[in-house]
Image 1: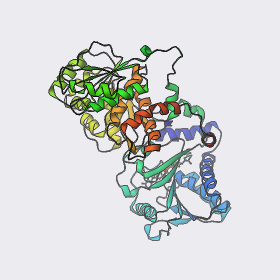
Image 2: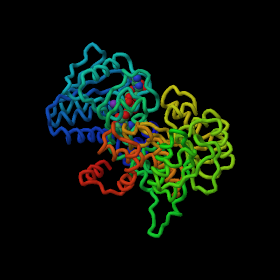
Image 3: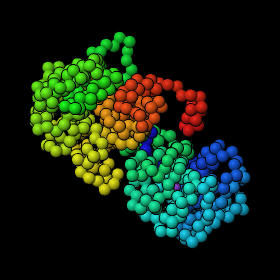
Length: 516
Ligand SMILES: NC(=O)C1=CN([C@@H]2O[C@H](COP(=O)(O)OP(=O)(O)OC[C@H]3O[C@@H](n4cnc5c(N)ncnc54)[C@H](OP(=O)(O)O)[C@@H]3O)[C@@H](O)[C@H]2O)[C@@H](O)CC1
Ligand SMILES: [K+]
């Protein structure tokens, strides 16, 4: 799913009105009506007190449309205007008149924090104070109002975006943002729903289709894409009946050190479980028996050293090489890595201490093969690109770094973001269970296994991150978050692949067609 920028959303709204020959007021009516339908389907007329807080721009206008429909349908509604500015938008004013004329229900005007209404924990708050038009910090009394929402413990439904959250800037004051239980967003989710510092402002989100011009939404290129099943499926490479293991490549996993042979075992298992034709592990001598016993499907080549990697030397022709899991940073390891990079021609996936070696020897970066995959977690990323002040600066620096060295950068996190060529792909699968030992090794193996069978490194990174998260999502159904082991993720890669082709259950299908 595309994530549109603020400018693209405004342009989409404008073009839609123009091409469909409707007014912006009609589009607002659609938006507000969609929210009403969503609430009505869930509330079925329940008389829970609903407090609707409307700003004076178009987000507030959406709130007024919703309020009008709820009042006309007999809901228990109280509407407030948050009078933070005199610059009321045209469509706000039209809907302000409409609610007064059709319902005789005059909204309450709030201009300071003295007169805040009482809100009970079982009430519902609808937050239509600011939308994507927020462009500066909110004034103090509005901040107090947002804190009042939070303190009430009432369920909060935000329209389009939690008020106080910028679309394209970091939050400076955490109290000046609404904490939403649910956000109903128009046209596309906002990038901030997925970034570590701002994801917490909405527990859940859903997209409401307001019928934006289809040609515009299909043809517009976005900097950010949200990755779910429907984005990875078209890139899936089906196998034909007469395929043989020679077609799926040979993965070489270079890594391990004394006490860390498990990392290579996990990565090797994951590569083969994702479909690599053959897997060879290149490990220190001490790991020979361990690996052959723990994972007989893999072949093993040993280094000259008993405990570390000191001399990368093999006579096979791997399709892809993974470097770094469990490897350590021994000076001999660094030396042999440099020598290896100078002659290597195979696609490369680098993880763990492989990344730390790069960070400590930045001269090696220019030796990386084109479109090399790097999979740092935030600490490893910081060592590579330096510290950042906020998520936006992090993404900017990461994009510049990826561009400079022409690499595919996989930033691991709750919503892993893959960066290549100034585009960012935000993953949607995965869960807190993945915060466990070895889960990164498994991801390295999955990505390697995909490249091995012919996926382009970028597709392999995006698809691999998706599969890794999905396998974990399936696994936690049995294990719960706490008991999830990296091994369980490997065991469920197959189910994650099968799930790509699962037909949705009937109720899911109905919901999807409603959403589309
Ligand atoms: N476009 C369409 O057709 C559709 C749009 N839709 C809806 O419109 C929403 C966007 O509406 P919007 O552009 O009117 O902005 P909104 O967020 O309501 O803010 C209002 C104004 O407040 C101002 N302002 C900013 N920061 C401020 C601050 N800290 N303190 C005080 N004032 C501040 C700033 O104006 P300024 O003062 O800078 O001129 C801003 O313009 C969008 O999220 C969606 O819900 C849907 O109906 C679908 C159709
Ligand atoms: K809002």
